[in-house]
Image 1 (cartoon, rainbow, N blue to C red):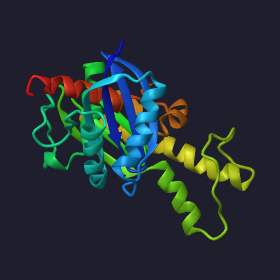
Image 2: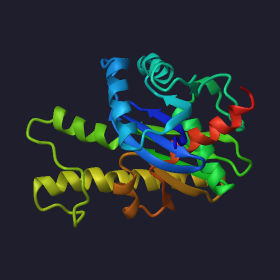
Image 3: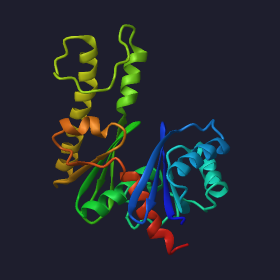
Length: 259
C-alpha cells in the first residue's frame, strides 16, 4: 500500500539535502551535489532512483529552501514533473510565524529563516543557530521568537581551499581533529589551524553575541562541519544535522491552510 510522504529540499552552494518525512518523522534523507549545469531530467532520474530504494512512497507535498537562484527553476520543474506537486518555495509571501527584525528582511537567506524556525520550535527560548556549511553563519533568535540578526563568516571548506590555493608550499589535508593543538608536522599544523581555529571562531562569536544581548542563549549547531567542530566547542549545546529539513516541514505546515 502506498504511503504518503512530505519532501523537504534544501539547496545550498555545494550540496542539496533532501529529506522524506512521514508525518513528523524523518524516514529517509539524501545528499546530492548542487550543480546548476545538471538538467531537471538528470536530477529526476537520480531522485526517482532514491525514492525507489526507499519503497516508492507517494509524495504529497514539497517545500524548498534555496541559496542558489540558478537551481530554483530546476527544482520547481522536478517537483511538478516528477513529484506532481506544486512546491512551496521559501521566500517573500511565505508565512513564517516569526517576526524578522533585519533591516532588510528580504536579504535574509531562506535557509537562515528555516533554521531559526526549527531551532525556536525546539527550544522556545533565546537561541543561537550556528550553521557550519559553505559559509559559517550565526543566527540569533530572541526569547519571544523573533529573528534578530546574525553573523556571516567564510566556511571551513573555503578556508581550507584558500590556504591550499594561495600558498606555494602548503597542500590539502583531510579535515579532522588532530590529537594536539601544537602540530609537529605540516599536516597536523594545518589541521590544528583549521579545526581549532574554527572552534575559537565559534566560541568567540557566540560569547560576543551573548554579551551584546546580555542574555544566555541555547546554541544549536548544524551543517556539514558541525559534528567536527562541536565536540571541541565550549558553547555549542547540541548538534542537529537535519535542522533545515525539519524547519521546512514546519514551514510547510504553517502555510498549508493558506493554500
